[in-house]
Length: 148
Image 1 (tube, rainbow, N blue to C red):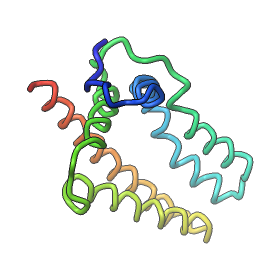
Image 2: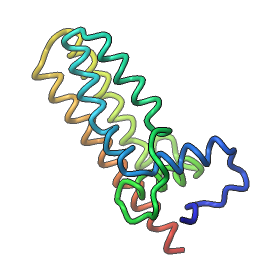
Image 3: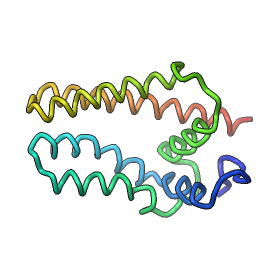
């Protein structure tokens, strides 16, 4: 499959990372990581937390590159690669969605550590909603780039 962008300025690690991370199994399996992190924090399951965080770090290297770009999550990752190389406003759209995601995730961690399950669940869901909104915008960026 053709790369979504010319790789003349990308390192081998960069190409390797993005190609493997574009596998839909990589992206979708990471979606479950935030609820797992929150659950481990809530129950003080430190080994589970360490295992989840290790999986998040290693995840982009665990899967083979996708055969094509037909999967929605593959478009997400390729769109994010394009977006990270773009010159964009630090407080513009869709960047603001990442700030909202971060604030909600931070509060979810706080609620998990304080053992406030309803607040933790709500903040986790809100964080995931902002993240999914953001990645949906990455698909739009990818599709716009591919149509040019």
